Image 1: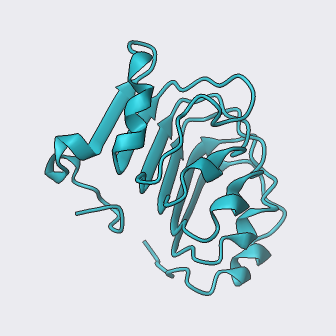
Image 2: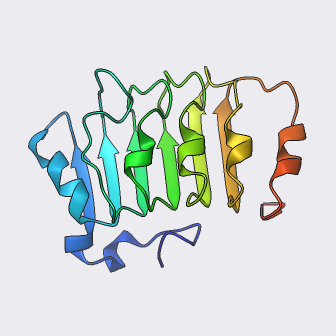
Length: 157
């Protein structure tokens, strides 16, 4: 099962196409992100733009960030084919700045445990979005922005 399914069976992805990296333990492996379609990064820390320390990739389809200190999505356009973005326990995210730069490709966006996130100005530009998960985010004024997503799958689960 690949990035299009709710559950991804990473054990079925060829090892040369998958990167799982704990950046507290190993920082030297970041260059490998250019060569894979699937990447899971733990404890990513940035200095200027949110994605400034990650190399550009024309192959990356799936990116999962866990416990990263990003505040927004500035620089995400360096992943020109990104289809699925998952962000878990990134407690410093304040807004969705930069997301519109992957509007042509992003179809699946999941943000989990980002209570400072309450500004969703760019998310409405993700016209190809099919799945949107906003779990444990900051308070939203309303859900009217959901009307913008014609391709969003409606699910009661």
